[in-house]
Image 1 (cartoon, rainbow, N blue to C red):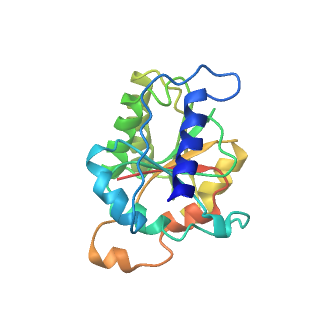
Image 2 (cartoon, rainbow, N blue to C red):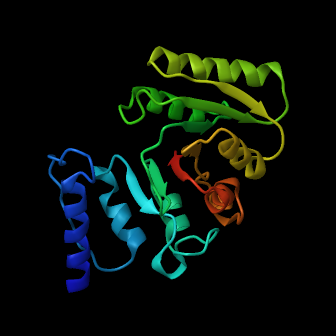
Image 3 (cartoon, rainbow, N blue to C red):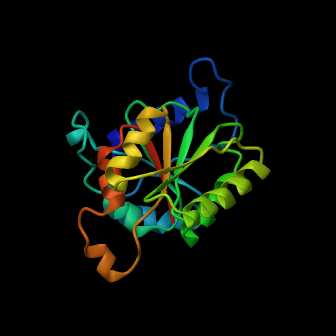
Length: 213
């Protein structure tokens, strides 16, 4: 309990200081210490959460790329709020990328990004994985119009291949700092699927990801 208290106090101090070259953080920072399982604690706090930030790897796998923290997938599947999965070397993004498939979740996510102050002024690449076809271009154009109306620069691209390979490749070629994509489905069958696109992307990507419902 004492170790947990010290960790929380250190984290609060880092946030309140603002970091090197930044203004001190003036909003209230609240710490809470919980017993039991992480997933249960996160679910209990979901009603007062707008976004959850969680590290990609735990202390046991901190140096191993491709390994995930023991509770990460459970947390992502358990809550419906946006989740920022941060890499160890996180830095404020200068380019973001939205994996767009035209689904209701993707359209909702684009509207969320357009309305949020978090990414204002940062180029947002809209990337559709699949074959070049009019329907894909129309979906991308509609999403780009939403972002551009909010003041974003929104380049679009249709890239061939499967998402597991195409998205990381596009991210590296275009020096994207943050990938935004939809999460797992909620059905009982989907929860049993191992190796879904979401999990694969979290494992492969070397930048932070924001997971949306």
